[in-house]
Length: 388
Image 1 (cartoon, rainbow, N blue to C red):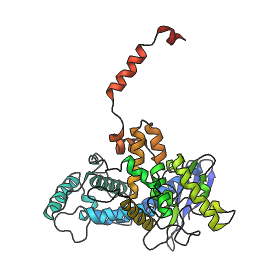
Image 2 (image 1 turned 180 degrees about the vertical axis):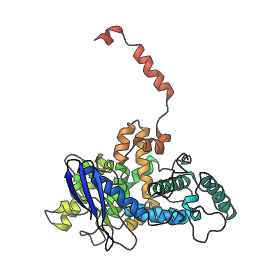
Image 3 (image 1 turned 90 degrees about the vertical axis):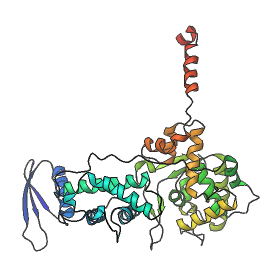
Image 4 (image 1 turned 60 degrees about the horizontal axis):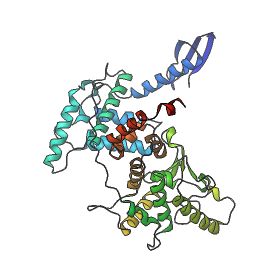
C-alpha cells in the first residue's frame, strides 16, 4: 500500500513499496481524491502490463478478463467462452484472430475474421455466425485493444472506428393468450412451485434468477407489489447464491395483477402452515426440495418449468418453449395493448429504454392512421373548448 503525505496544500509526497524492491517516490499535485484516483489508474495499468506487447490477442483477452473485479462471475465465464469459441479456439487451423500479436493488430483483421469464420462454418456444415455473436466478438476485441492502449502496448485502438454488426434478432414464437391461461387451470396437475413460477414469470416479466431469489419479505400483499433487489446465480461446482443486480434499474418494484396475487396467497398460506413461524419474511418464495431456507436450484427450476410447459401443450412446432419466453410474452403483450415503452422497460429492469425498443419493436403498434386521427380530433375542437 502506498503512503501519502501532504507536504503543503495541494502537493503530496507518495512512497510506494513493492516487496523487497527499493521504494518508489512520487510527487503529485491536486486534492487527496485526485491522488487516490491517479494511484488507482497507475495500479491498473501496472497489472495490465503483465504481458509483453507481442502477446497474442487471445492471451491478452484472457489476461484482461481475469483482471476484472466489478463484473458478475457468470459474465466473466461468458466472456471466456466467447474467446474460446470464436476468437482463439484451441486447435484452430488457418487464420486465427486470437493468435495475432497485439502490436500487429489492424482494422482489417476483424473483416478477415468474419470471412474466415463464415467459410469455416460452411465447410463444417454449420449455420453462419449470427449478428449477435459477431457483435460480441467486435465488442470484446475493441475493448481489449483499448486496454492495450491504456497499458502502453499500442499507441491507438485500430478498431475504434469499427461499427457493430447489425443485429439479426428474430421475434420469438410466443404462446397464445389462451395457452397462457392454462397455468391456473385446475384440470392440470402441476407442481405447486412450478405453477407459481410460471404465473409470476408471465405476470411480471422478471428473469429466472430474480424470481428464484425472492423472499416472502419482498412480497407486499397489501399494496400488491413485488420488490426485486437481487437474483439467484449458479456457478458450476458452487451452490446457488444471491447476487446484486447488474444495474440500478434491476432494483425495482413491480405491480402485480390479480392472478399473481391469488397464486401468491395460496403459496403463502401453504408456507405458513409448513413453517409455523413469524419469520416467514426470511424464507424463500421458491425453496429447495427440502422446503426450508435453501434455494431452488436454477437449473432444476428451468427443467421442471420446461416439463410443465410441455405437459400443458405450450410449445412450438420444432421445440418446447422455455421459461425465458414468458418474459418476452409479458413485454410483447403490454406493448401490443398500448402500455408505454417506459413502463415496460421499467418492469423488465432494463437500464436503457433503447434495449426494450430494440428487442420488442415488432410489438409496438405502428398505426399511422390512428396518429393522423389524433390531429383530426384536435383540429375539430370548437374554439370555446380550447379557450376554456
